[in-house]
View (spheres, rainbow, N blue to C red):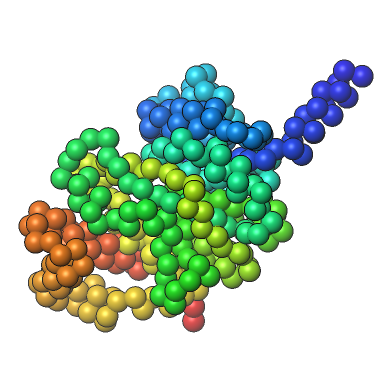
Length: 325
């Protein structure tokens, strides 16, 4: 009798779960704790009742992240280090909420997030994929942080591809809303062939569009993304973005024609490199109307790292089974 009562209670809680927040993490226990604290504070201020759960997927951390459940009310899943795409898929399979919110572990949510979610839940039948507004900050002042604050798309939260409109939007996983019903009905998941962060969220949006997903942007949902990084992390980040761009083309069956022939062939690129640097510098000045020499150097370095990532991926065999004929 008691066992049946507990089983019914658990089933009832499962069926009434409104929201599952999924946070993949790797060796960022301090940042993760900061994010979880901001979530607790945001939901302590809500004006309506929302049943939610926080699901942390620890991607093989070695910094004690597995102890986070001792200090925070979360569901913790530990997996072998496999990358953020795999971690998010683990979160999808374990989620019980009808709406899923993916966050990055280096984010902080706005104090009004709980109320924003309450409004969004009232519109859940009108969209399949949603995104809030992402604003960037740095908890430590540095040249790289100031550069990233100037050059990233502050407050945009959705990078729209050529063609315009939200039907071509790329929604980043720093603040990604997804209907669980849409995921279950389409079988859509993150491509696990990406070895690290960079591109897997782009491909997810592309595949969601192909499966008929309805996209919507919610300006009332605000997340703050931490720009703080070291020089090595800066270089690695843009290398991963370049590597991931090629994999998006491979797994998405899209011809890799983003750049001119001089920038697609590695040997030609290095012969053309001085011209490439001059063109990068000129583009930075035109776009940002700034002649800050340090920022121009970082801009050129950023673009160089992306191209090196491209070439590294083009030399690899990752995802080549999906490459278009």
